[in-house]
Length: 301
Image (tube, rainbow, N blue to C red):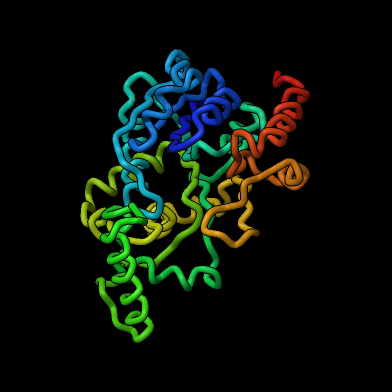
């Protein structure tokens, strides 16, 4: 079966190349979007240029200015999903959404087996209610990430103040946006789907254009948008609430911990197939160790 990897990258082209080469197999195909802010730096990378020569690289494009926390993240994801769905030469059975700072910890054959032997159709992490209650403000307030991302500008400070005022009024139960029609779900934005789910989501977006409009200017919408669609659909029972990613949030920051060699044992003891986030230099020893472990595994067949 064929597996598509849709990748959003914005930094460290050498790490992206390393990840692609580690995932590469005859039935693995890659659809890559590079943030428009980063394309100049990526274009100077020799290894990144060489990716285009690999036959399983289906597209490398830079169409969207992706802003952390903004709806632009979803636009880039939909862009890649459509590339997979409309590829007339390759029909992929599974789709895996990863970042340019992910890395596989299993062999390609082990990766495929994880999903191909499952009775589920989608694999998505979901946040439990206890940790999720505070997320409701994301869809009830206006967020301006995509309007201005220059934190030194006057416009950014004005928009930040506007959001702060909204938060204070929200505590007084004053709503600024109409409530969602269905139950709110959310979790990690990184997912794996089979083709049936891919086509369902794209058809749902085509027949419900109001969804994209409603989620624009939503805070961290990438961690809500696809969960909202799928967990409120007839496919909800076919979703495994595990995306098979090892991500460490123990530092309590807005971004996960950058993994290092001290995390190796916990990583390899997990049931994950991918880890994030990693760094080309800070995680180099860890990545080298993972490569060595994978190389020592017997070849499938």
